Image (cartoon, rainbow, N blue to C red; front, side):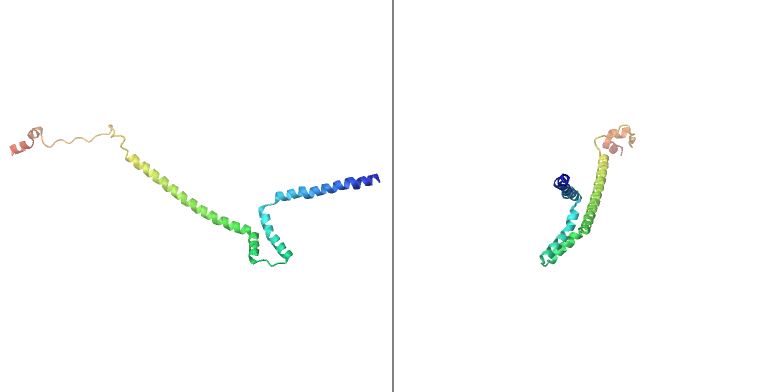
Length: 152
């Protein structure tokens, strides 16, 4: 009898307490760890339907459409992301083209500036043009304009 009493007053309540701890704490914590926003959103239409049938009130069509939207949130989010990504790729293409044009403009500007470089004079090692020989002799030049008049 002592063992029976000990079992039902001591061991059985401890076993029930352990089972409740396992179900209400450990398994609930594991469920909450696995819970995602997507699962919560997918459960919202179910809550709306249960509330509508429980209260036996008519649901407005807008509320049902919200429920459908939430049920198909994956499809809408994929379509939204595709729209955003197409705009981002277009913007990246325009930025890439602008960067290429700016780089080409900078390169041409640098080459033009190098061509117009006036900091350095003409190099002395380059051959110079030979001087032209004067057409008139030194005697003719000595008299200048008056010499031509005198000889005429």
